[in-house]
Image 1: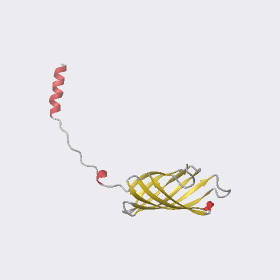
Image 2: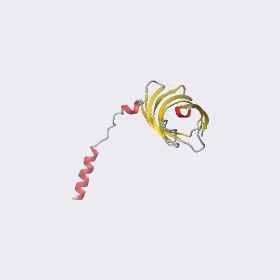
Image 3: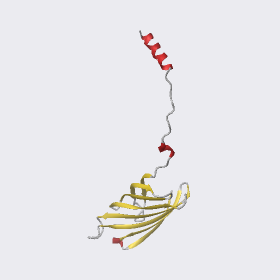
Image 4: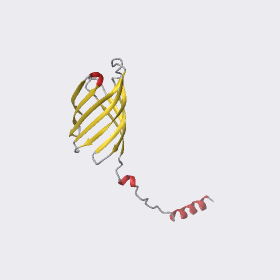
Length: 150
């Protein structure tokens, strides 16, 4: 009985064939939607870091608009939004407005909005040069930082 069932399935399987599926349109087109997660060390001290995460949308060919959140070691956290312009494959410019909540700030100035403009030059595969100009109301000043990324 088992042999008869095996032969029947074998004969039926010879009639089965595989067909190629059509290509998905997702594979052929680049999506304007992106999720991002980036981390930077900043100029406040040797052991400081900032993590940005969120959603970016490709508005034009080389311009992205993004919204997200920021968290850093200095107990500042908040929302961020901005524009990123990819001037060339090696050079990008980014402007950001971000809110912050800093418990260590003077009384009445724990919350606010900061502005940041940064640029990044891709020198080699493992080496980037970046510069940042940052302004926060409670610090009453500007910060300029230049660093290398390995």
